[in-house]
Length: 572
Image (cartoon, rainbow, N blue to C red; front, top):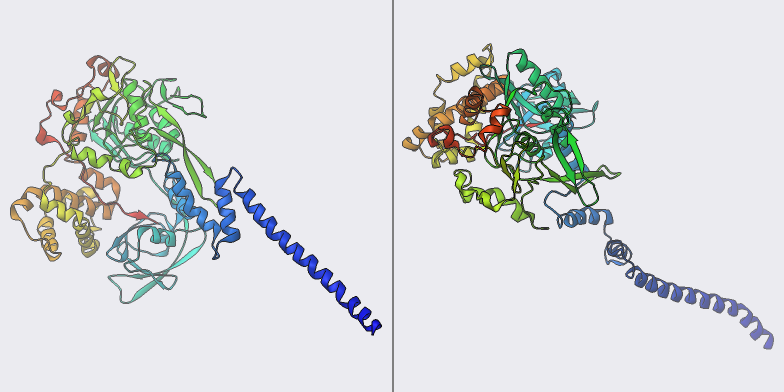
């Protein structure tokens, strides 16, 4: 019996010891984890502690990286309105326009109802080589349906753009063909122009429209200047209306063509960034030419740098309406996944020392974004008197003219918007996109005939004889907008010009489009008039003093016109 007990004890004792050790380890781990989590929340890095605790203890499995992606924009939103986090997929689209190229199939398209419609083919691009035509409806991509209410411009661009050398299979519906036409397109590098157009606006006066400041803007601008000088232009109108900015260096290089060597263009300064001056280079093609710069409430950032440098150095005239007011400089840092953080690191100042950044409340971007609407509501687009200059800090140009800081660039000559032709009927038709829609339909129905004209001038002359407005009115009525004869007659010229411009662009591109659109633009006409009267010469700008009233130049209210809001195509 004793022998049996000793044998039983010898068997169980190691098991009990092992079990005790395991329980001790478990208890130790529990207390260790508890103490570890307590120490976790005693750290200084709250964000890291929260994410680690969620990862360790949250009741459900969560994607921590997804939480981080959602949290970063909220953190950045607590800063100024222009600091921003850009996800990797959004960065592909955001960066393309400023880099001067992207990889895609080379078409301009619009969303017509729920269908992707090719408006035009980029010359020399892969779609042209593959046989895609203007007017094609893209209904399948890689054999998957590519239409419906869920389609957006962003979704289309992400599908059609891609790495150079990759292919995409398009299924297109063509009006001249039965069924679906399958076309394979190999993606390639597609140029993105930032200088929309340049042409001779009047005898020896060149006009250049710049839509943004990108990596290729300066070279495009130099080409435009060279072309116009070869056409005997000696003065220039630079149109920066609705130009939201872009790269700082592009604006500096461009304005340097008009300033004397070593003149100050702009300087930047921030808490962690000491002052840095940017000077005009010694060489330049237009240092003695007259210059008039056109701005409005959509001109921002690099556009304001350009206009501010011209104004503060008494180099030329700024005309139009007060600019947007973005005087903050963003520095960009890119993450491994190609996402990026654009953080405000400094303010830029024009040569007179003014920062033109408008007021903002940290973390309140919604209020900041309502500023343009508030300007409209208080009548600033229509009356110069609505802007109380005494509320802004006063600075002086190199010639002693008064200029004002904060809230954008105040033009030397204020020109209000034009309301001629803008009434309730026009607004309904335009806001529903029917002017653009009918113009494209007209092009589509008559494309073969319209393509036979030798140039845009011949096409424009032909369109002026067509009942475009009458047809538009019938089309609008089919969409539920009843005819209003008096209002239609009042808006007739405006609607005719816009439709004519759209149709010309569908066949001949931007060159003819802008020349049709701008033929009645009083802002451009006033700029040409100023040049012809030598009022934009540097010595005249300095000695004439600050021109703040359009009435000083004999412009009557009914002469004013504003470029209407016009639709643009997307590019893929």
